[in-house]
Image (cartoon, rainbow over all chains, first blue to last red; front, side):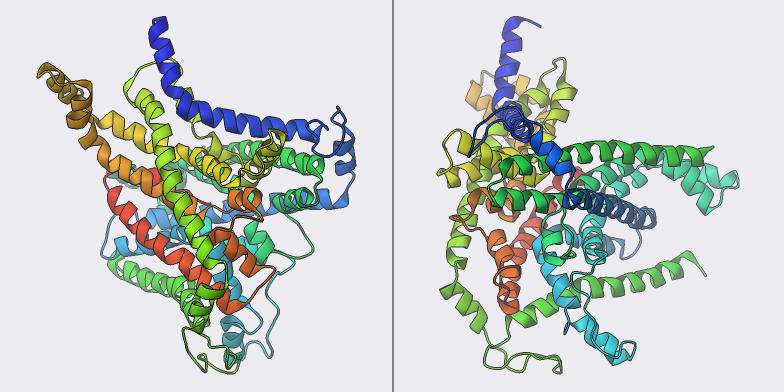
Length: 284
Length: 275
């Protein structure tokens, strides 16, 4: 490669990739620096681990970490677990399969905030679900379902929003498995379950990992579902970070932000690895 | 039981689930948006007692809805255009030139999708304060949107550039076409669907984007998502929230359907993945 060509390629990459790297790089750099006391907006800027040591000792921080991981991991698992059977079912086109695909993909088109509103509207104290259960006679009086302490609402919303995305990735992967392979497995006497764990699972694992990781990162950093439908006594990491920033405590916000990035990164790696190990274990 | 029967049963049960999943929530939202304030919709009534468009008119006249619509619908096309223009050279390099590290460059382009939006939003704001541009909010949001949604633009345009056929370019060159004429006859026809798809997807992403608009823009700039967020939180009035939800969701569903049509031939995973 000549120097001229090298310069040309760098020149071409600068406005696109260059700006992306500059923006994301600066954002991460500022977050890390602020978590160690630099770039102070309302005090002296000097190196200090005080913000980290103070934050680590806080109960609210520990609870936020546990809660965000709980939401992230379960949302990823539920979405993928629901999407797998649907993707296999829709592998071959049949009458109505396009319609089903479209309906299942519909949540992709609905904004998260709108989804949260629709859901809260349905489960509210005098909402249609409460009325229906009373009408059936199962519940004698309306129940308080909104902002439930176990965050089932948030998990339902995350799964509703993310399952179509997992389905999209998995459908592509499942459809690329040729009939010959599955027929061969059938000829060798493999039942449905065996065909899944020995043929489909290993051949679709990279799409499954991709879906898991992307959903996990989105859900672990959730803000809007948590604020609108989540438990009021717990805070997600994003929510905690926003509340620190709102109080002008940029350094604490940075500590939470950097922790969130590390958790998203490490968590994704662990999830991807665990998914692979489980699938490998099954292949034996 | 045959496979067909099984499929039929599965189909019916699934449609039932979807009715619960989609039709009921949206019907409730439409009904709530039509509740007339003269008589409240209490739990003992199946349908709202008085139906009117009062809430829609009221929201239009007495809330920041108008300015939010203007903000969102100026921001989104500008972000789409800027994102497309910035993505073009990189996509050309990734799609048509061989160079070491090309795969790595493709991976790095996806970076904005991996960093959580609220982290980008908060520390981008911090950056704006550091460099003294904190009053430059509309420009900052536009800039951030154009860059954060560039991964979509680069992915789609790279595939489009790959699809331009070398023999068309060569033929145009043999016939003595200038740079611009070659671009027009050989590149443009192959790039067109990609250009439309890029504009549309960045437009939709920008209309829906919440974190940047909320953190960077507050309190001066109101977009539709930030207005809806406020309507769901500090000033929660259910019929108003219903009106806003419908205003946010309906145009986007139509745009998404157009996008799906545009991308039908292309890989569907390129066009999805919003949160």
